[in-house]
Image 1 (tube, rainbow, N blue to C red):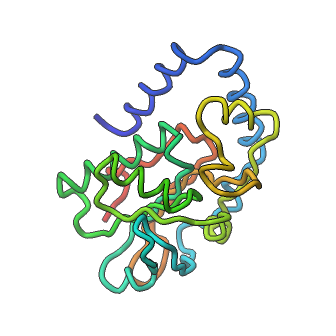
Image 2 (cartoon, rainbow, N blue to C red):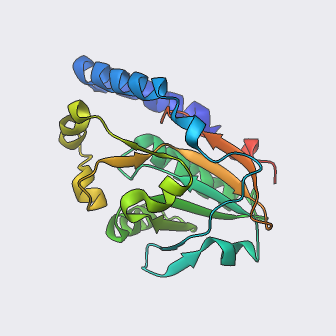
Length: 209
């Protein structure tokens, strides 16, 4: 099953299980964000990817440019392990790794979560690729991906298990819009998929290695 098919199933399940008023609040929030054209600020194909060094789920520092000395990098920014669409995306990458579909690249995923929560998602989902902790969304901001979650949906997120202050150890309510980049060994972005709509993600089949 392709990733987009899995994401559509999640949407259908939410439509059946989440109260209508909450779905409407999520829909309005997303509509407002889409109207901001956040993707226009993101790095694009042809840009040089900024370097970074961030801790992985074990607290070990991982450098983008050091990794690029060995392989191109598939770099994915995701919101957190409270987001079912993000979890489907991470599982999709792991499935691709298991099936040897992306052996020529190294997968790195980045979230604003603390190391503790990134470790949790790594262990629970048997992920074999690095999940890095971007405290304060500093790196996501360099890639032009950061927005602030609207105040009117913050309590809704929290009541549904997405306590952003807890997960991110941060009171700003800043998040990255989902983005996937393929970065070649010359540090250039050669594939980009960025969408304010968190229900849309790039399938590995779309990434030409």
